[in-house]
Image (cartoon, rainbow, N blue to C red; front, side, top):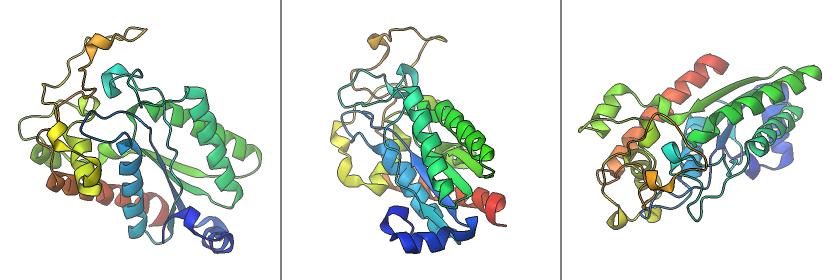
Length: 255
């Protein structure tokens, strides 16, 4: 059992006593991922990675995911104007990250791994972490926090296998082969490959405009084609991410 919320409070207290447990916190978003897939890959993927990583560690618990993320951006998520994409302000995310870390630290936890699944969240998570660390330090509580985005653990040789025709970068993988393959492996019931819109990877100018220009994005909402996605590729991606993340956590917190 690795899910923190599934424990009774006395068992949880015993598990985290002394600050030896590692708390993994998945952070995602509700965001459209094209007509072929559900709107929760940014939650389900980091949650699954966190759970499988926790199973490899001696004393790790997975906290309930933070499910709402920062506003989808044109050049990484298609934009914040698609029905279903449900975003929060940066300040709200910052405050939520800070408050959750502080709360878990007050339970006695001292080691945290934040597993991000939504590109746009990154710097707001950093700010929340910084505020939490400062607040806790003022109380005489020292914590150590790792922040990672799971796609950064995909090895070059894995990229060559998953993208044999060439890799155009993580920023335009929104709703593409990466996320669709992982969802086919983890939750095939939430993917319908018959609805995939096949198109070239998005190409953007080297600047942003506000308000966002909808014409920059395909009507499908995806930034690259998921046509070559497969469950086999999803398993390969999952295995390499879990392996790399587990190794990094062990080196930082356990070994």
